[in-house]
Length: 248
Ligand SMILES: Nc1ncnc2c1ncn2[C@@H]1O[C@H](COP(=O)(O)OP(=O)(O)O)[C@@H](O)[C@H]1O
Ligand SMILES: [Mg+2]
Image 1 (cartoon, rainbow, N blue to C red):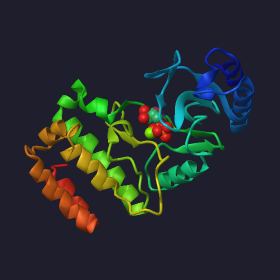
Image 2: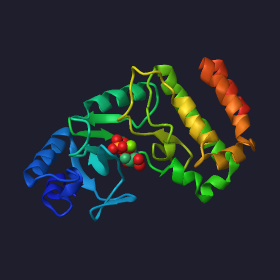
Image 3: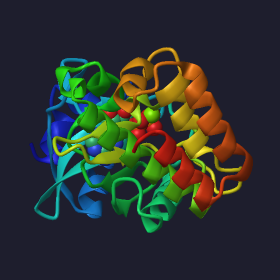
Image 4: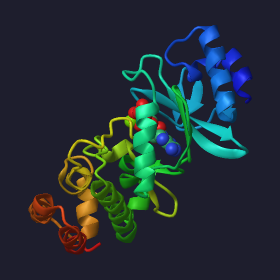
């Protein structure tokens, strides 16, 4: 649906959630058009006031959209977001892209980011699904996740939310992974992406059982030992040893 028509219609709230005046919605639609966004498609796993969207967080609503004739993800700032603009997030996402991680940033403005759409399922749901009964698939997903985390560690970018990766790692059909949401990221803190994600995936209460099974590590203690060595040196060698110890 064209962005202007969306803004004026019954589902206009997706452009200014949780509340915005018709005038503010029209202004947001105009800003999106200026950015090159032509249309929004109300589809996705999350329902927001009767409209389907790709996702919802504390700072934004993520929509399936058209930008320069291609399908993209459009992240729109919530009107009650703790952030005044999305420009800091855009900067961190661009840095992550330069390190080879995150969905590619395509365009930005104060209230919206246009990025590649990561097709697939959040890793939390994926690990609980039948797809995760194949040990080889689980190992591929964990390896790729940790490799992406390592690339961010090396680049000095701390994602900030990978201690609960359930909704911030998207797993595609070919088991490719995308780390999303650089809203809480920082290039000035010490980066702890590998340790945060590995802790959750190998040791944490909610996600680790199928991962340890796939890696042939029955107990948490084995995982703790492997992780501790990486944590103390954060070197390429200790990262390789971590992957090796996990059979990845
Ligand atoms: N590029 C993307 N492609 C597909 N889905 C995405 C993309 N970015 C975010 N999402 C979905 O939208 C949800 C909310 O986005 P997120 O970036 O976490 O927003 P917030 O900063 O508000 O927490 C994510 O958990 C994810 O499911
Ligand atoms: Mg989020």
